[in-house]
Length: 388
Image (cartoon, rainbow, N blue to C red; front, side):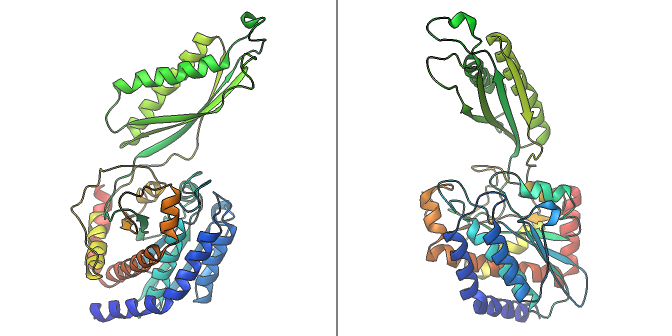
């Protein structure tokens, strides 16, 4: 029965492929930044509505977030597919999010067309790159009723399980006093001196932190002109670690670095910690292994797992803390092409990118079918999530 169902799912996605590719290419042509993805979210929601999904827009107060649901014969289990669609400044879809949404809706529609009983949900999640759309959605309970959630991220390598670092956004502003830099510099209080000291303090702090911790930042405002003592400067930093408690402890030290710099330069500091911290990703191995089996059955070769390699952060971590979640990477380009580049943007719009998207849709739908047909698998998935 299982093989027959999966053959039907593959056939369904093959029939949908032209439509999914068209959607992915249209989103690729019109990159939209965080919380502005009106075209992309609308296109994905419309495609789901056409196939009988009930659509809720503006969920959690986010105008480009949506929830699409389809029930067939039963209200459980509830399988969630996550769609992303935001782009990056300057490099467009340099992270391939134009492929993620179409892959997820393709999986959902193909599964809905099968004879399996259960509920299928697609959650459209804006602002992964900046703003933490899934963090906001998580706080509002958008993922609470899912038995499992999944999405596939395009990459330059195929990785079934990949850890993600917790990430806390923190900004600092320094307020000094302007004066003429040549005539009366002693009358000023230099906010740029404080900023430079802050960066130097953090560079010294790096000697005393764990290997998995990352602290990195940029100066947003460094002053107005070289002949004016800067009265105002600002910067934005990210503090990351493999454990949220470690990230929070390091954040305390980073704040101390900021305050010490203000004291030394004789200026005032204002520190603002972002509300939407990204949690660490919590792997679910039974769910990941089910996906891996399906991916292999589609002819994809998978190397040995190295889940701690080249780590970043994603708001999918917040989802994984709530419900069993997978976030595998799927190869669409040469390994030498990094994410967040114009070259990766080109790959995301290429034939290779489209092929990867279709494979991702098939593997996710087949995994959803496994969960819906195999109560034992679902039990293993839930038990693994509880164990942490």
